[in-house]
Length: 333
Image (tube, rainbow, N blue to C red; front, side, top):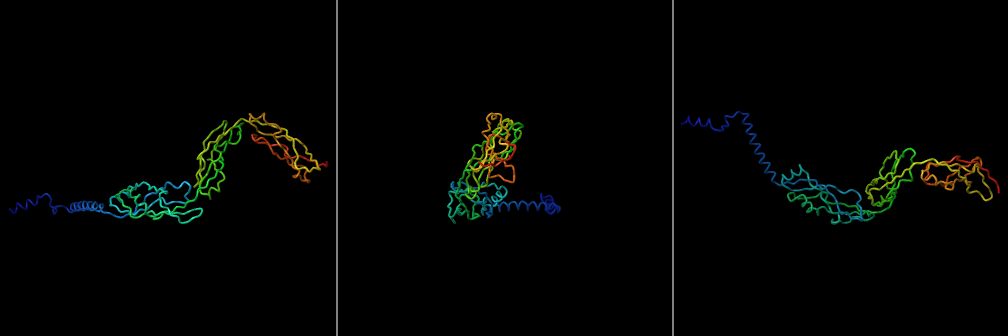
């Protein structure tokens, strides 16, 4: 009978004492691992406090005001939630930005002047944030606890647009007038202290080479920080045409000569040389130019007086004349 019992024990399904030491360790560690999992899952069901970050965006800023300075773009939230939800956030971190409607905030004024400062307490955003992040996370505290808004009244100003072009026509071609810009001016708006400094708005820079026909392009305007434009781009038209060289003999007039004197110049006629588009070649006459010598420029120690070109057609280019000065004689009447 005793022998039979001993035999059964020796052949039992699990005899821990008969196991080798290394197998005992493995089994022990297995049970520790399983126990740890159950303990961890139980702990994840418990509630904990943690701090998380959530992005912030702003909407509905009053149309007649402009924000001066930077606003906070992140809230640090102290929350309470089950452990697994906190871990889920820490791993995923997928919260959408909180959209703050500035018009709906209970703004309170701190200081007045050209720039007015207002503040709003973020505690009034708890409900909104709770709705967004879900009922499983409960917001206990928001940092910063106060939002500050510096508002300035918007100033408006109309300024001309200046093209920023480097144009190189093909040989025997010339620009036909300045590039045409449409619209030629824009309204800029923003903080008055910035708007007052703006004299022009410039287009983006482009390089055009070997141009032998007319070009129409849309160009972006170069942005100015914290300034709004009524237009973001303009249309620019560039006109080119073939040209030739032309010449005219133009008389030299005298200016500011006292009534009692007579100023004679030699030669009294000067040749003007210029480039002109083929379409305008026959439109150029000597009467379209005005060359003068000014009596007030006379230096009696020098026998010559410089010639000045006061007027010529704007569609001409590379206008020059020779000689640049003439000899003179002063006579009494």
